[in-house]
Image 1: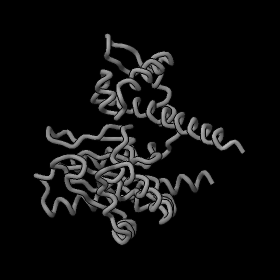
Image 2: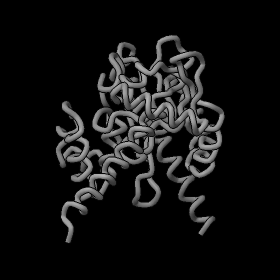
Image 3: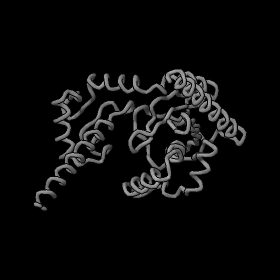
Amino acid sequence: MDTNSEFSTTDARRTGSDSARRIIELLFAFTEDHPRRTARELSEAAGIPMPSVHRYVALLRDLGLIVDVRRGLYQLTPLVFPLTRAAEAANSILDVARPHLSSLSLELDETVALVQQIGDNPVCVERYESARTLRASFQPGQPMPALRGASAKVLVSGMTPGEREAYLARMSARSTSAPGAEWTEEELRQTREQGWATSSQQLSEGIWAVAAAIDLGTRMVGAISVACPEFRMTEESRRTVIERACDTAAAISEDLARGAGREA
């Protein structure tokens, strides 16, 4: 066996995989709050060195996925729109969850989101914001921290023990500060049994949040998250928000089960 040849092939595959991951991370750097980015901003947001940013930007521009607004400033093109529509069409949970999420946001007058585990990150896939001036804000489609916050804890609790062990090890290795590594197996078991978790100022300063599990049979398929400015939360209002989040997650779970039964 040509060992050098084997290693060179493996290295080439690893390099190609890393490049593909970085290109995707570059696309994720564009958000609703930051629809236009300079090369420097892309480098900082995606954690990619500037020489690589320029190389990847050139490739994405050749593919028609990004365009120069002016020299050194970029934005996504309408070619990404079909991807968004395809993702929504494939995600049947959205159709079921939307009226429930909207109703809960109006009832509580707080920001409500649907969060799902996509790859190695929780991702906000839908959001209904509070009408109040001071409110928490999520960006649909943007990956959230893997090991911080109520939603992440709930989603991790829904993994099998083997999946969870591998996931926590993988995510902890990627981060210098990994609060998720401090979740004990007993905490995660209790979170799974009760179906909800809370967090305080883990994702945003001054924000308290609760997340409640959405289940399809024995499989967790997502979580409802309600995020509130902590200064206006009393013990009574926290209990109310937890209760209503759990009720809404249960209603979505029931609707999903009925839909799955009809399809069967």
